[in-house]
Image (cartoon, rainbow, N blue to C red):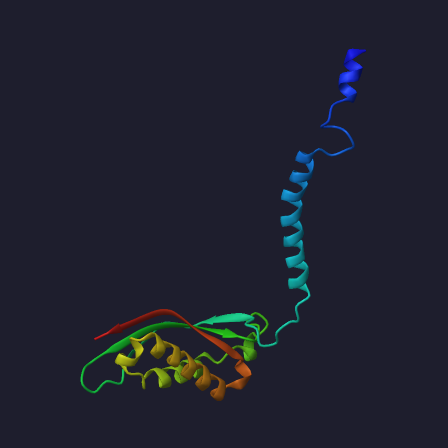
Length: 154
């Protein structure tokens, strides 16, 4: 009989969850709800038509820079972020790589080494390349210019 009285007076199990149970539920439940909320919001975002859908990798460029006082050359790797899907563009719809390389070489040949050594010079070069490519072939859908390699030799 004393055992029955002791079991009924256990304060931890009276009325359902203990305080440990509630704390565990909060510790696990709140981060889970926060992550789920983030997923629901990210799926409901509108699709950006100017988002990069594919990346066109170009062979490395090596060229002399515009510097009459000294000899300097640039070795640069460039990838282009396109709004067109390259896997869907096969055959006659493939990007005109020769036209793209010619446009890029035309812009790079006017660059001065002292300008390209600064971060602002690299950013301006990206803007110039983007503008030139968009003007030369708007249907290509160039959205981003990525430098994958950048070396100036003096």
